[in-house]
Length: 553
Image 1: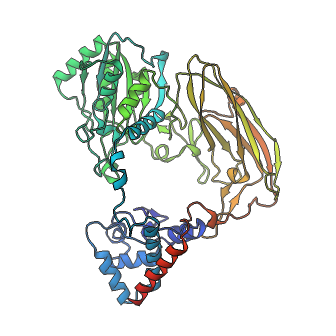
Image 2: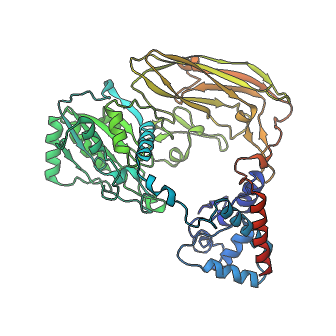
């Protein structure tokens, strides 16, 4: 599918480099390409590179390899296309090219024989297997970011507990945008299979109809206290509770519906949580959000922080399972969580950072980038020790013989705790600084393993020159990979700093040597898994027949 954006000033809906040179030639994609919602008409309305919708369709069809225009409110794309054919501004061969790809997809999906598929799986929607899969996905994705004095998992029986926050009893906030509606919807009524955090906790505690003290407390979008009476009551509940679980984050949104939101969460959240923490209760903070919104004082007010993201309909049960130790958390943070809203801090990915700074070697910029949490952070109730990091070779020279360039990285992981758990093992690599765009680190392999108490396991990861290389050709010239000679560093864990003496045991270096500039043999795009597959002889003939009929028309 296309995109609303422009790359280097050229809208994607009129970009030959992206849809022809890169997608069709370099990547060898032979499947169907559809525009984003109304994307072609944005060439007139937003990008202002044409003055009419007719010219927009003209530009898009002649500049790109789009096959279908997503214009759900009207069918003017069809009339514009017909007019362009009549005016000879659009060649019939271009139309035939797209028709062939569309017909091929319809044949592969068997849409002529079954135009509305799915009747055979209707009964499986919301069935036990689906719920189990949704629950497992939520359980394994939750990230424990802080656990002061091992406050989690909560131990039963509990003397007292207070539940609060706008996400505490709202399944919609666990699902986010594109859930039932474009912008999503809050509440529980539209999610008959859903389990809120409140319900999940009460189920674990076996309350059988009785409820724990609960108040929403603050409004999700504004952060305002719901009422003075609620505020007073919340402080009384917190004062009487050993633990207060606060669930908050973002309203539901999608695309430009969420772009207007400030980067920081509403300041009222911190005001509310600070008042609760002042009573002496221990705060357990649960973040339900689709983006890394700035947290301000919230992490310092909490004894424990769980990042739940958008865990879905079964997310409430998954969060409760993790909090009460039914599930040992094993998720890792999928992005760097910034602490400030400077453009550089928000825009710099993990591979353009070190522990404290954002690094842009292209422009020679090194900027302080305070982070709340780092890419790959994530705690467990178990304790995993990494040792015996080693390489199969400390020096490799390029060979054209198959299998001669393999580097094997080994590590031993031990669970030194008294409980079992899963560990997500992340293997990173840092290339030599031979180019301005060289990354500070990149994930090359990952694996989630299960270890019982006291159990250890040796893992081996195989790497090839393509793994430590980078795509170096200009777009349209094929996917050439360059693996320049130099010193490469491999290490485990996202928080590792190989310049820190205390982290050295997790790091290893090797020398790589290759003649010339280090360009590896070109890959064959036709063997790529995104090539669109193959058609049977019968299906191919059906496409040919359909196109022949179109040409005759």
